[in-house]
Length: 135
Image (cartoon, rainbow, N blue to C red; front, side):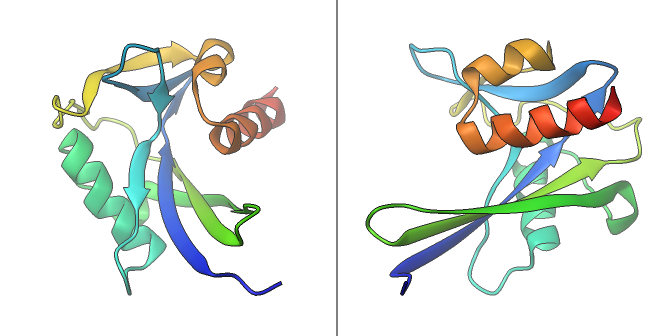
């Protein structure tokens, strides 16, 4: 199968006990997203993650503060592909803030079992796999 268009995202899993830090989108319908976003052309998954997390939360990540977790690629019926790279935050102590109030209603800790009800399917599967491996 020939892919027409392939986009890439990097996402940060910020976990504490049974909760995950999520951004709540500014929409009528409740929807959560993980910090992170689309990579620019030629940008590595780590560099894209550092840029996006800084833009959204004001936190400067380093290679030592994260650990690669997994990647997933989905190809839709129009042969467009989206690869998501997931990283875990391994050092705590950072102060995360909502730096894009025009896009996000809030930044908050949510029990992972509640968060997955309001998050996209790929992120949901990754969060479930992460927490089920901890139990």
